[in-house]
Image (cartoon, rainbow, N blue to C red):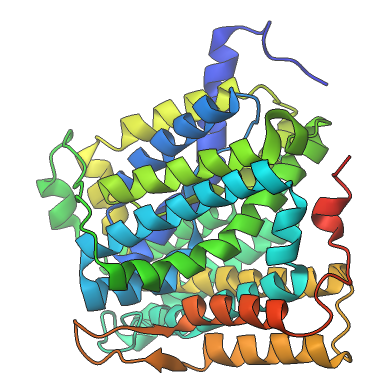
Length: 425
């Protein structure tokens, strides 16, 4: 194992900048899709990673940033409850991780297995990806995410979005070394250049923005309806977090479920997400791209993530940089999202396949089928026609449904989740 503790400081700084570069594309893409401030997302990603390191004793080389699982609920919650109430829901989602960490401390990691087995997590992740498919398609064609308005003419939009998508595909499949880990940034750069060529970039806002400015922080407001709308979604990224911790452990050769312990990593993730909601940023999660970069560069020292956090926080205060990010036209993002959202659904399918979930068994078939329809079909439980109404729908509804079905249907516990159990003593 390569140890950076004895290496020059300048190498650690460069390695930290490289890690932020790898995470950057997905980090800023999520807030741009949901209408959040990308500068705030940079700030909360850096702050969240530092909080994670403080809780885990700076033992785990991971970087935390914007979670794509929350895209749909944040968009819907903003429209129904407002941004401040949505951030209150994000803070509450962070508390869910904290409570799960406490449960793991008291009952052991097997508790997560029983609550969130693969037959639950798989269809929920598939729903996250497929529910977002119309958003990607609309944006690729130059429309708003909900298709309500045409923002860029169709022909121009397709000439921008498809090359951006093609570039992302080529880099992801044929890229070598560190470049294989930055397909999103590559696609954004090509798409932005084309958008600038076609006159689809609003340069006036970039010119008017100050060089240095405070990010547009938003204080949370607590609304029980918004909280209940967003909190169930936290269950899916929780298992994503566990997978990320196990993955980086397999790279570094250490068992982070034992030391610092899953309860501490969940607590760190929870504090990072709660802090994000406090300032108006998106919920945080561990990034697989950064784990890939750790594996490729063999930079195992968690201090490089401290430097990545410092760079992220510093960029958050560059006003022109934020204006540049917000000027990226929707077709650029739409083209890339055609791949990204499909990839999320593929991860869910791979979860079912890897754990050999037998869909010929009635119990599994029922859970997967109902979860998918509830998650993608737009089923609403309750009322949701006015600001004072409340109803579960989308990802929140399918997550709750999958958990309840798994707990009440006969046969719960007659499987083994290798993703976690193989790591247990």
